Length: 321
Image 1 (cartoon, rainbow, N blue to C red):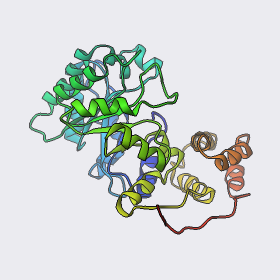
Image 2: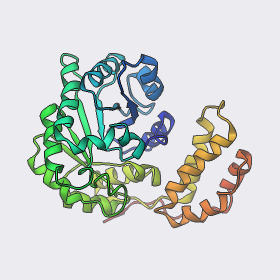
Image 3: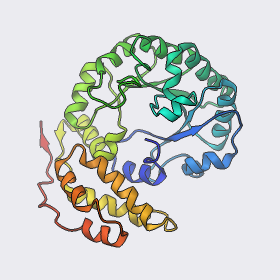
Image 4: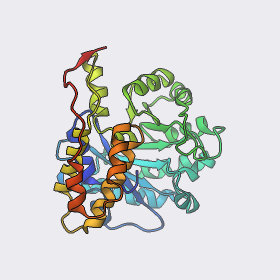
């Protein structure tokens, strides 16, 4: 999610409802104690009780491998007001892994344990808990259970598990049943993540993993109302209507209206296309609009075209399952 979940995007998504908490892009920790401005840039919500404007808590995520430096930086973040420190052992990016970060640590459970323990020990007395985001392994799933156990033993109070290995990347299918194996052995809450694009996917992931909670990553961008749709079903047993193109278009328009005006227009257009490209991967209607808009380079022209050729809206009424 690096590069696509900034503070503005977090604000827009959480305002729609359904989210219990959100997580920042990762702060990369190497061999230095980072100044406060780095954390405040990645997580400007620290200036507002570490919550989005709509009131959703924002957890600060660290990525690194050195226990002592992770601990030092976690303490800086905690003193700035971060309510939770989340640790990234899931990033599959080759550059990150080559520099000994993210999923690279899953090759050695002991390193997962030491990294989490370094943060846990540094935060003792602050009341700030540690959580961990994992995959099922690096090359294969051989160490999946051991890595999860290592994170818990190191002090993680919740595990979020992306149901694929680093080698599998984001290729379907997600192995939710493996997350269930981790949940069965864990004594802390386990959250399932991966390939939950629809309400039906949520049901299947919950059944296969036994997890009551799910984390949405790319799916929150693909369908910004999915979290609300899941929460509404949990509370009422009713299914909200599918997301309309008009809703997506309005959200992208709101994004532009609130984005930093100092950003060059070509950068804004690039960001809009990036988000729309994610939307189209699981929605044919969004795909048609993406094809129509993908070659437009001027922001004014893009925004004008964004409002055009919208399909007729469907019913807004909730329907029981």
